[in-house]
Amino acid sequence: MSLGEMSLYGGAMILVAALLRLLLRDRLPRRMYVALWDLAMLRLLVPFRLPALTSVQRVVQVAAPVWAQAVPQTLASGAEALAGDVAPAAQAGFPWKAALLALWLTGALILAVRFARLYARGRRVLAESLPCA
Image 1 (cartoon, rainbow, N blue to C red):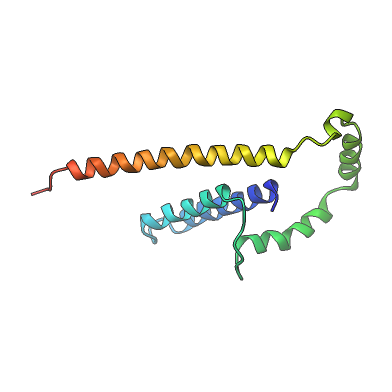
Image 2: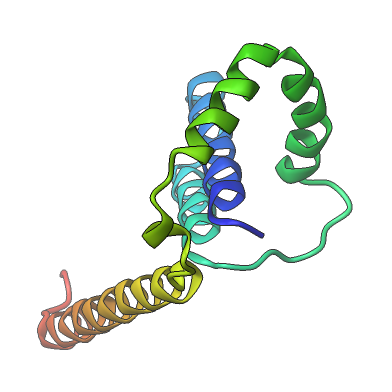
């Protein structure tokens, strides 16, 4: 799965979460909204997909060919012309996938450490709290 596909699917999940919040404002518990946003965040952070029979990804896969046919040929030919203008040094084969993976892993590690520290601090505050009487 490419980075563009992951972003597209994550964006679709964000739209679904926002629409559900708008349409079901007072009908779902607040924890469900948090869970929906957590799923969207997880989709944006995890670099692989899990197979499912029904998903937003299937909707995007069905809609993608229709959208591709709607793109005018002039845009496609313009993109080919721009691709031909790339400098030879850029075509030499810089390992973009490896660099993006390293960047993603670095970000994931930083966030994991931050969330672990916040969790530990929250546990400590909770342990020191006094019960309500």
